[in-house]
View 1 (cartoon, helix red, strand yellow):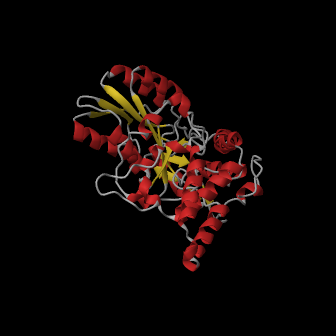
View 2 (cartoon, rainbow, N blue to C red):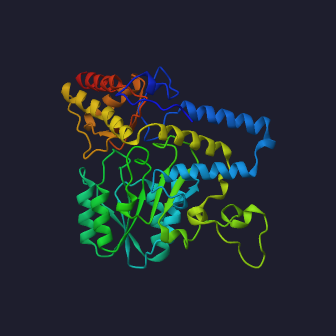
View 3 (spheres, rainbow, N blue to C red):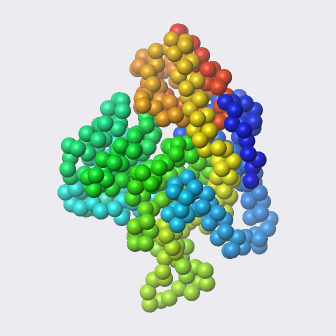
Length: 391
C-alpha cells in the first residue's frame, strides 16, 4: 500500500504520486487519469510475474484479488461488496441495467441532451425492442436540475431516469438529492452513470436509492481501462438477468462440476453480473493499487483540493478580466469554459502551443485537473488564455 500523502493545496508531494511528462501540463482526467506511480509499479510487477513465473498465478490468489478489489470499489458506493460487479465497460453495466429495469410499451426513460452514448444507446435499444420511448431533456445551457424536474412533471409516461451526476461535456453538476426525491415520489426508477464523479465526489446511494450505478475505473478512480463497476440495488442482486452466461459468475466454478440437467447457481449478490473476460490479473492489479492510493488520501480533503484547482483557474480568469463564461453550476473537479465562436480557435491553438492538454469539444474547453496539478499551473492556464484573447 502506498504511503499516505499529505494534502496541502499543492506541492511536490502530490505531483510525485504521479508519472508526468515535465514538458506538458495534463488537465484531462475526465478523459483519462494521469498514471499513479503505484499503479505503474503494480503493472510492471504483475507483467513480470506473469511472464517469468506463470506457475505462481494460483486460482485462490486470483479470487482473493478479485474480492479485494470488489471491496475497495464498494467503499465508494455503499460499502457492501455484495452490491458490486466487475464488468468490462460502462456500456456493459448500463446494458445490464437496461435489460432489467421495468419499462413497458408506451412508457419512457428520461435522458439528457448530448448524454454520453454509453448511457444513451442501451436505452434507445431497450425502447426499440419494447415499444417504449426515450424522452430527452433539452440542454438548458444552465442548470440541468430544474430542467429534469420540469420534464418529470410534464411527462407522466416517464418510468425511469438514466442520468449522470456530472455532465461529461462541461462539468455541470446535477442535484441528485432533489432529482431522486422527485423520481421516487413518482414511482420512477433511477439509473446513474457516475463515471465523471465517483472518486472525486461523494455518492449518497442511500439517499438516491438508484436501481443500478455504473462507473468507469480509469477516470477519477485512477485505475485500469477495460475494468468498470456496476452497483446493483438489493432487489436486483437476487433476481437480475445477466447479459452473458459463463463459468465465471457461477458457483460451480470453484470445483468445475457443472451439472448438465440445469444451469449452475449464480454467485451471490451482484457477482451474478460479473463479466467473464475479467480473469485478468493486470487490470485487477492496476485497480487494486489505485484504490489503495485513493484510500490513503482523506476523501473529504480530496474533494476540497480538487475544487481548489478549478477555483484557482476561475479566480485567475476573473483577475485577468478574461471574458470566458463558465458552465454553471459547476462540479468542483471539472470546469467547462465556453468561448465565443470567434474566441474558440485562438484559445484552442494557444493551449496546444503551450503544451496544455484538455478536451476541446462542442464549443467547450473542458478542464479536469487532478492532484498532480499545482495552483500556479492553473494560473498559467489563465495567462495563456488571456494572451490568446488579446492577440
